[in-house]
Image 1 (cartoon, rainbow, N blue to C red):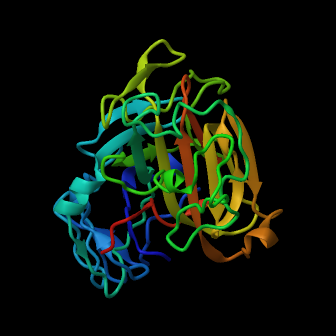
Image 2: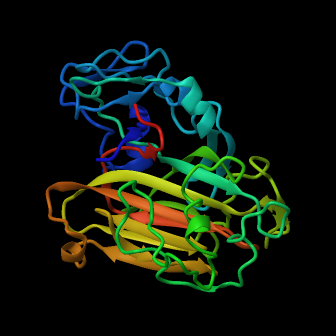
Image 3: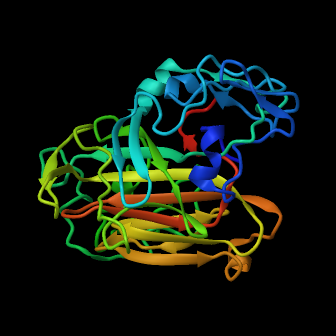
Length: 351
């Protein structure tokens, strides 16, 4: 596991409603209980690790020291306290959290010598990072956003993640049909002052038949259309008109890291635009690179187990990278049967 801090949202009462039996608890302990203040205690904590003080995220308090006492804030239901742009979509919802820079300055980790506090709850969402860029047709804008002509562009990144958990540009010294070189691409999923603004992002999943789904997208059977614009009114807020006739903040990337237990039979499907790369066990499993309308790929983990280097009964990293690079739509949908073992890992802050 790389140096991430783990975010665990633990709404015990909503576990069955939100995830049914599909998603496991965040770092569960075998004998955990809910403390009187709504925090988490555990006589035998889960896996050891270093945990963020979650009250600063509006996600409730968790401390980790041989299953130590929970924080002063109770574990809340969705949406997290203080988040903005809380938006119900076709399936689930999204919400925008604090700037990552302000979070880093105001929070401190709590070490866990004996493991995290236990709980019988489940994650009400996955948490990651969304980075806002200026569109390339604006002064000081990023040339990879809005300017390149739309086209599929496979093979932008290599088939394995870099040692820092980021996609590796596959064309050093060159370009691709929709990207302007390695230096500019390396800014997509890294925090760069004056180039991007990075926020915590929450995605609320819901049960959808035998999968769990987050869908901010169009063309979903039986539900209303929706779009994925978590940064409206935030960040650089250089706006353009979308297909829905409204002004939106385009030009952003989304990065999600989590882990799952491979039990056999799992699938993971992404549908959306523009670029999407999904890595399982650091191996590229989905490549939807390029500026394009909604496209879909599915990973059947059993069929690709050898390529991905996975075997049943073990836990592996999952990383999802998306880029919204061109008007006039923004679609983001995940359907999966994966059993997540945490609620998201945000890189860049080491505790």
